[in-house]
Image 1 (tube, rainbow, N blue to C red):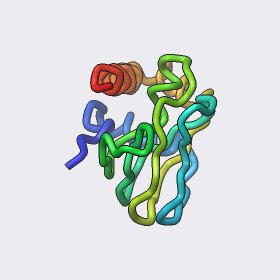
Image 2 (image 1 turned 180 degrees about the vertical axis):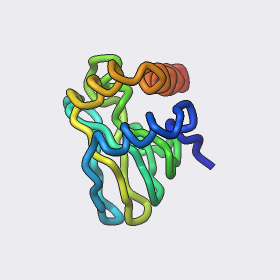
Image 3 (image 1 turned 45 degrees about the horizontal axis):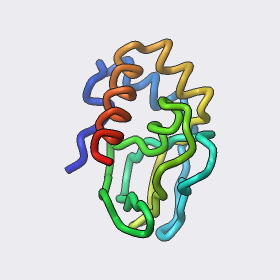
Image 4 (image 1 turned 90 degrees about the vertical axis):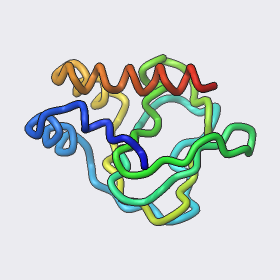
Length: 124
């Protein structure tokens, strides 16, 4: 089971994060993040599962509570992996600017994002 990035937050802060983005439904097979592209958005998965792939090889499967796309935003780099929906997804979409604003406004969220990004870079 995926650990939720929201677990590091109190209920009020978790609600602020969820309200800070736009709820979307994405179809199975959709690729919301592509390797080598700019860090312009991130998604918090609320329902469903994604495959994280490097060079066509799956390196992780993530589900509800996981954020995808944050590593490139935090590290100010191009995307290092492609994310593909294994199931239909419900997500909260954030622009890179909104992620950065929320990280500044809610210190625990910023710390959780940096920890998630650091863990993914270390896992490379």
